[in-house]
Image (cartoon, rainbow, N blue to C red; front, side, top):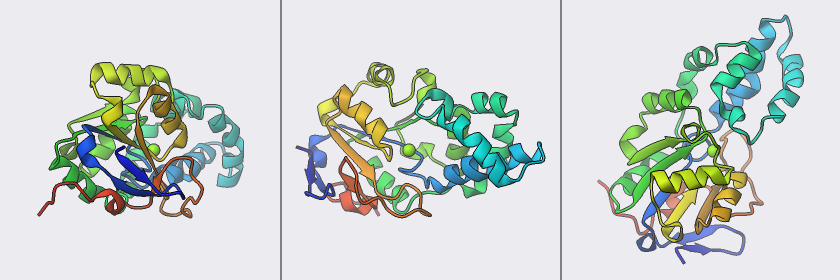
Length: 234
Ligand SMILES: [Mg+2]
């Protein structure tokens, strides 16, 4: 058992010696989801409305059902889809706001410890490859991972069995000896169904929203809670 879980679904410890692979989500796990929530919740409706003479609130109300209809599907994460649907140059707008892309607290420190470890460190994200590229350049991200994978490469989001079958073929891992950290419990459901044994979620994916108290999976607030047992770094 690599995870020791307290009754409140907090994580007490991770036995890293029992693990070979760590799969890490990007947005809301390593990076502050505030950027994405603000971008899709305010910036994009604002731009869309400005071209149509609508205020932000009217635009948000008009677009809410359009967004809701794609939630959990690959389209939800697809810049091309939204660019066509909303008739906006999403990558250009996103580039304009790129300075809002930020690490979550302690995420970089956690990655430095992981890099010094025996683990295969794999980023798996539903973000569009253009978004991944932009964020990887901005921070930069690539130095910390053995490989970075966008689910768009498999044509299926992490919420689907197809994603997991593609991943294990593309980057073999032992599900019993793998830890997956993701702020989305729907994604964790899918990983669990596939057989990934060790799953952790995040209490506060968006730093501007209150921490989540009730989670269905063991949850951490900050990565320092699971650093014990990883190699020391300078
Ligand atoms: Mg996420």
